[in-house]
Image (cartoon, rainbow, N blue to C red; front, side, top):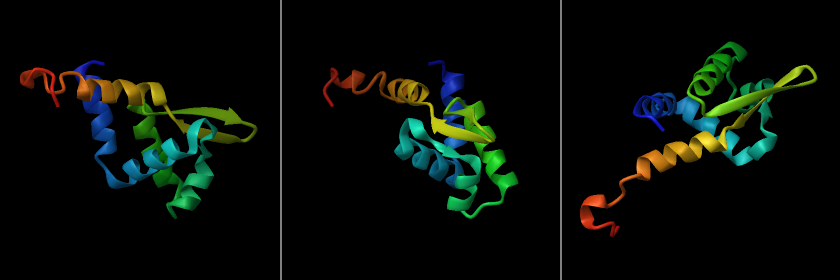
Length: 99
């Protein structure tokens, strides 16, 4: 992962509502949730939810798919793993690799 991609992802998560949304989608797995369900769950107006989903999507943290008339959002586990790998890449390197 490139540094600018990590900064974009971390920036998207550096907002309380988006972090809560992302953590819920991680729990839901590949099934994900519809945008309307997310709005209801967080008692958030649809326009506000759309804004947060767009930010998470632009950062590569979530993906969307259409099912009938709904758009389903789910965590992008591959990108999440890349971000975690980036953060842990040099873990304890200055300590001989001993954490």
